[in-house]
Image (cartoon, rainbow, N blue to C red; front, top):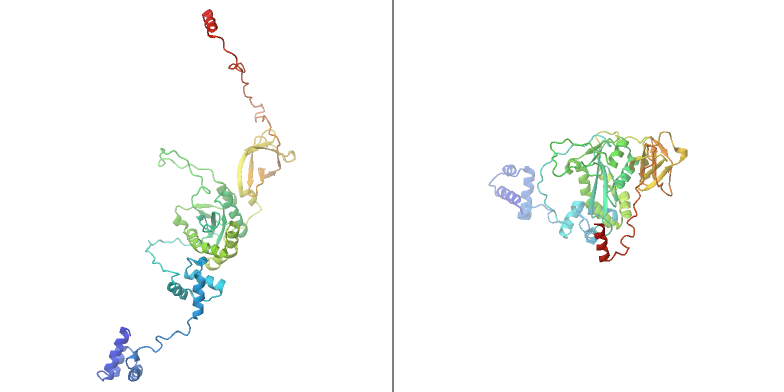
Length: 430
């Protein structure tokens, strides 16, 4: 019996002894006179238990069967489900074991069984979040996360993610290295699936920005920053007409950072349950299970329904744009040197005025090599033996290396004269 019930019993006993009227007892208890009369009748029959609700101590008719609880605890006690929280555990029990239980009920069960322990949240500094963009495709956050995704079962992997700022729609894949080529491959798949966003939002990594080099003792305050050449990804974004915005802190691109926090919990556990042990199996799980779940449960509707993505045009050749591009000068023999190899332009494709000009050399993601001049693709062939002497652009042959003198050849192999003979020769000359 709690304190409220004890107070109610005192008022009822005073009314029963006629120390107060039933109306006064109703005012004290905040009840109607009719209910007070009902309680007084129950007091005569049941005694002090009249103030206790009749259903107290009885099991709820809506409670789950004990067999359901035993099965749930037995499944969650397996090593593969170690570390699962109530919310994630409830989803896996429903999808894989057909056990229907709410996350709050499961929270009590797991706490009783010692499978879950609630954590007190620390007081965090209040941070005002930047409002979302209004349309899908206005801003896409792009970043890479390094983590033990396979929990030691396989190779080291990186997760590259692109998340839309307006809707939180996710596009991601695992790679073996956070390289320019792998980031370009993910960018290629994003552009083919959704189109060109208005802008990309990333950190200041070397993939996206060329850092200015300065000496350690050189002051950087009074010196204006130099305009550095773009990186390969920066050049590709310019050719695609997509602006690049740099974040000044990890908190600035908090949407993709919080996405990594969710993935490092749910995705790691999902890969464990799926038994993924290599890159191919992990990417298959991401495409078939994780991304559909994310885009179904964690996305939101944008403020405006229209899509800000722009379609790819005929001028956007992704194979040429998303490649490693360098410039090379054409020799008088219509030859181009690249990575130690000599290539010759096929005579049928030689345009006018190409001698001494610069070609665009593209090392593409599929391993092929392409060259173009003023937007015109050229057919090239690799020379079997590089030319020994390449004529200069002025028409004069290059200067040969000077011929080495041979007067000292064999000098040290000749026998030296005797000491007396050498002295006599020296005295004679003097």
